[in-house]
Length: 113
Length: 114
Image 1 (cartoon, each protein chain N blue to C red):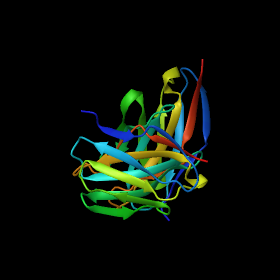
Image 2 (image 1 turned 90 degrees about the vertical axis):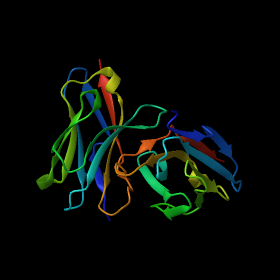
Image 3 (image 1 turned 120 degrees about the vertical axis):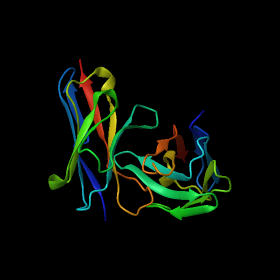
Image 4 (image 1 turned 60 degrees about the vertical axis):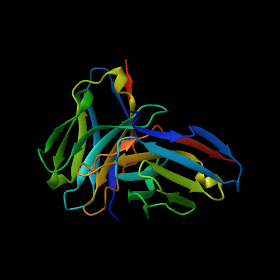
């Protein structure tokens, strides 16, 4: 049981490039979330999903898109990376009835030059 | 907007001393409250959570937190700090109807001196 895994662990992009971050969970969780963590800012919610095929915007969705085609995977896409998207990205998942308890992945460190 | 405030971005204690990390939330409606810990270069680990049961919540690694509605606070304590407690601690809240959307405080980095 691997829990929540994230791919890749680290990536360097040039401004304007695109990439997709993959989050996978093997706990059959319904809810999945993408956060970004910046120094002194805590974690902020980018997008989330309450089930396969559904997505919704969080606090800071601009510049990102997401997809949840399979229940176990939640993809975060950057269409045209900007230096302001340099951050550490965390994925999390949870399940009813304990939907309030989120399990976090190890993070993806992204540097946009 | 709903928010959560952690007082003090850095807290330093001596080994064996009391640890007190402060957290206040902004709503008059009791939400779900959490403390997470993050060790360097790692993800977040749940320490404890309050979900409207007992107001004193015990968590892992000897930590506990008390929900005080009158003060809208959920401070984290540990009677005796250990070197291994050095980490960053995040208070987080879920407000009613938000489908599990955690709102995080900005974090408090705890240093433990020998």
